Image (cartoon, rainbow, N blue to C red; front, side, top):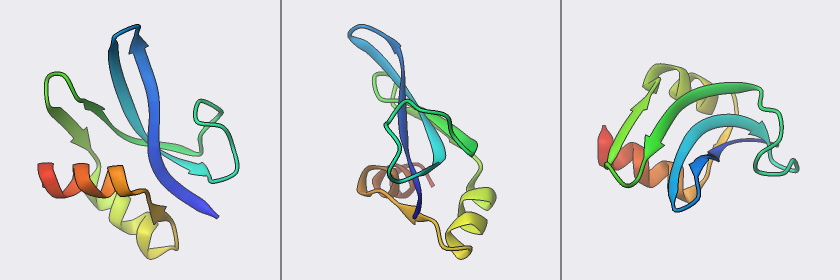
Length: 75
């Protein structure tokens, strides 16, 4: 199953996340299929390709609960 989820980047105590399309069984920081945006929780900023995310959801990708929350908050 393909999921749209967060991949952690950044420094210690300064996380940033990328919103990525990845196989659900792979580890969090493994190779991704596609990068769809990024999210900075400390600055409360998010940039993402909304059209591409909706296209992938239409093709059967699942959103994690956290990504769904981010999309609702910043759309």
